[in-house]
Image 1 (cartoon, rainbow, N blue to C red):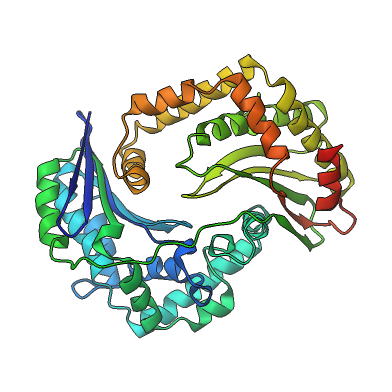
Image 2: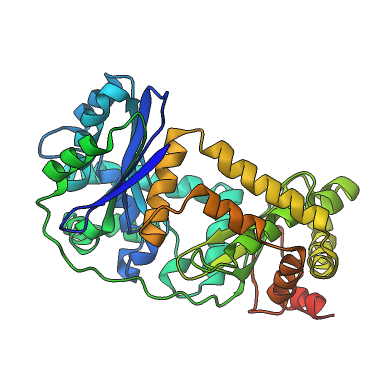
Length: 420
């Protein structure tokens, strides 16, 4: 399998990976613009823009966009994250030029019809309402807000309803002008793709875009703090976060192994101690998330009001214990899980295209898979123990709780247990 990277004179990047034996391809445009690139008054507009891309262009109606892809058996979709927006499709090999043309059209030529803006405004408001009614979704938005208070990285991707109600056509087109410059666009394709053909098509579709400057995201600062929302739910939703490395920091691999060992599967410490031995919850996990300049180790559990204090205390105790006695077997198991997850994911063209885009966005190149595996292998047991100790001795953590939490322990009490 071969990865090829090409840059047009205006800065537009094209990265492809041919996968022999495949009869289909995944391709899309990844934009280096997401929630953290919004000013306060723009909060939610990157996501609104993603929705509007499918609502008609100068050449195609909303129905035609869907029909052209689905008539050939493909699918098309998009998502918005805090650092990127993606528009992507999966089609058969013969239909790659069609898919690329449709994606280019929705990214470059949205018409932002006023009537369609109003329709989609209603859809997004429903999406916001659905998220607010889903405790194990909204808890992570609140945790993010507590971790990065008063910052773009701490605001929700969907935005508040009052902002969404106010966005205008000019607001949408203005965000495009600010952030959709060619050097912020990455075309990634994997599967049954021909690199030279995709470069040729990209030159026709994107080569005439004028190069333009763009604003960089404000550096993030992990502040820590807490948010408690009292509601008579059946369970308390408990989420705790500690500052961890960003994805350009070599220690990001140590953070991922640590999180996997602590709560990445049924054999992990938190799952075994808190669910299997004590029966204090149904769901508990830990994960390491990373951004360009910061990251978070997040721990989540859902439990009853009566058992929350014990669950919180045991979670802190396990974190403290791991800093001193994390075993080589646990680290090796976590390494194996990481490597297997990486390699299994690469069997999908969609996952490969996503990986290509993200690596080009981070490094402006695609490191060899062997390079990534070597970095995972290089993490030692002592590295993981030291990371765990530094986590507990670092910045104030962030805490979010939702449900019957009126008498629940607060962040200060958890910090006292950490320090004890």
